[in-house]
Structures are given as C-alpha cells and as structure tokens.
Length: 232
Image 1 (cartoon, one colour):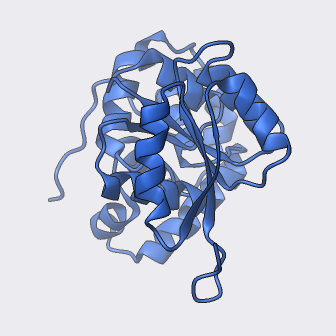
Image 2 (cartoon, one colour):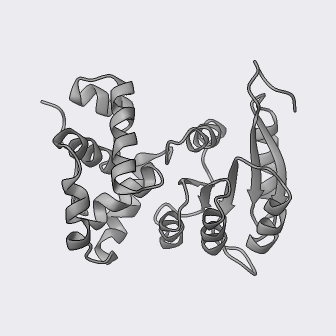
Image 3 (cartoon, one colour):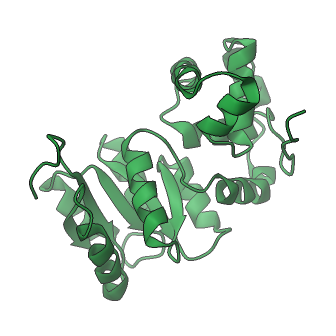
C-alpha cells in the first residue's frame, strides 16, 4: 500500500485461531486507506515467528488460542520491544484480557465491536494512547483490582514524585476519562493534559496509559468500585 498524504499506513498483524474472524477483520481494515494488514497468524507461536520477519506497528491479539495463548505471546512481543498490542476478547470481563494488559498490551477490544471502534482502537494505540473503550477497561479493573497485590508501600515514593495536578490527572485517567473529558473537567487544553500524561508516564516508569490505570488501582490511588463524580 502506498503512503497517504506522505504518511505510511499503519501495518497490522492479525492473530486469531478462527480464520473467519481474521477474514472479517481483514475485510474491514483493508478498506481503510491508512491501514494495511501485513500478516495473519493462528496462534501465539505462529505470531512470534511471523513478527520476526514482518514489520508491524500494531498486533490484534486473541486471548484463547492453541499452543501459545495471547497472554504469553503479548508478554514476549513486549519484552522484545515489538509492535504495540491490542487484545481481542469475547467477554467484557475477561481475566485473561486483564492479565494480557498487565503483560504490556496497549489496550483491548471486544470482538463484537463495530468497524469504527476497531479502526479507532488501532489508531489510538498506534499513536501512543490506550484502550478505546475506557468504560470497559474500568469494569474489568473494578472486578479484578481486589485480587491485585498490595503495592502501596512500593508506590509511595513514586506517587510523591507527581505534582498535585499530575496526581489529579492520573486519578481521572484511572476513572475512565478521555483526554478531552479531563481537559473539560480541569479547564485546560487537551495538549496540556497530554503533557501531564507524558510526565506521569516518565516519572512512574510506565509504558502507556493502560499501565497508568493499572498502577492507579494497584496503589490504591483509585479504589475498586469508586466512581467519578460529575463536575460541579
């Protein structure tokens, strides 16, 4: 595929053990001028082999697959500084999807998501953002945060490195708010929110927005079941 307005298309690899699922995603993605499907794999082992010889920007990774599941495959892709990973899952509250996010995935998406959501998710993760459906992320974290280890002591120093405003931004991110929503809440620009997020990730040594959400839950900055209050 050629460049669009001088910008190279986002190269995507599909990993799913169901050929019909891969075919459906390929049909949707190949219709986009700025996205190109560069490879397909039926399990984690095949995916790792494919990625050794294929340049990709984003991997759409299924969770349950033979030989090697999406969790272990994601862990290995991330460890090798490979492409960003979006987890595909059938269930909204899937402990395997949570484990994959902990392994370093950039986000997750339900398989029944519409074409627009699929495309948005790929572009968001490719640009360094995170999960396209914050509410889904929040429900997943609400369910499994109670099983996370107590990391409050370990995180005390890290949290102290954040300014008051950075801590506020992190709490709002963890509650499922987008940059635009945070900007409106705090009466600042989206660019300012992005700057705060960049500093938060740098100070805490985190990879992306998803890990920031997990960190907030692990450290007790946001409690399981806690809900955001409307702006006054």
